[in-house]
Image 1: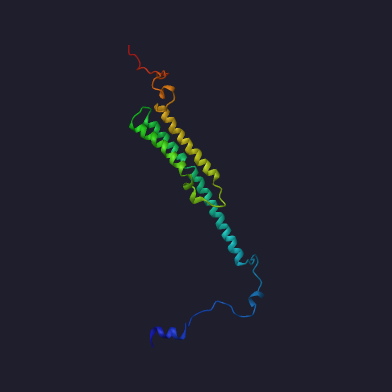
Image 2 (image 1 turned 30 degrees about the horizontal axis):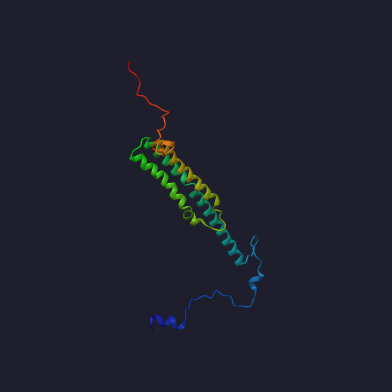
Length: 180
């Protein structure tokens, strides 16, 4: 006798049939235990799927707020870097200032792509987007302020017209304490 033919030819010896094809309703005559309520499988599935959808919507809203508040970290870092660069015009301070201007501009251009993974009918993304835009505008203002402290912003008429005399300096610095 071949090993596979005996099992295949005669069928399985230990198979159990779980479907109940009997016409008797003996199981329905037994009362449910206290505290147990019968719920149809469809209602249970719809409640579970609704809970999953609500949980997913809450997760998406939470992550959208995290993304919206992310520029705050960049503001403190960029502010510290601009403070460390000083107020003189040299390569490092100009590079930091250009970076401080380009990062918010690129972030503002890509607002739609940033919040694309969190788009859902049950999640309102308007307020997180507005917060994201506002924080990036603050970062852009920080970069413009640095341009002004470096003296690279045209703030006087003589900056635009070469025939006019430059503006008078308001602040003067003198050297040290006299030792005599």
